[in-house]
Length: 108
Image (cartoon, rainbow, N blue to C red; front, side, top):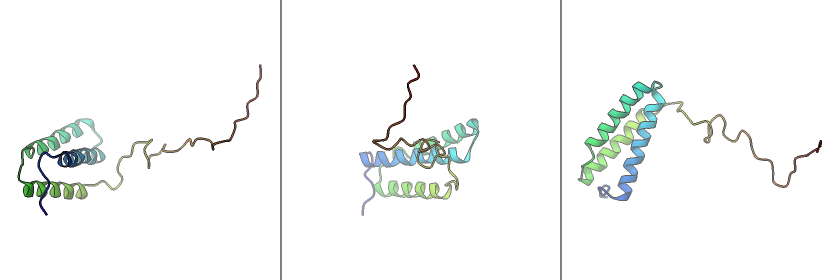
């Protein structure tokens, strides 16, 4: 099976996803902004170096290596935003069931 087609929409989405996941993985491990920014610049440089690769087999190898690195450096307890599924505030205040009414007492 041939590798991904360079500059295709699917390839751009795959590379963008890998880039975002790389940044999130770095953010999970680094809690100081100054260290994180330098790591983010390093990640950006690595992606920019491979920006003009046009050989599909070489591109496939680069994407596979990046996936392997992401699995290798995955944090065991990643940061999850509070209101996202798995976060501490997710679904905390569930809406009332449909058809239920809240008692209201008019004091005026």
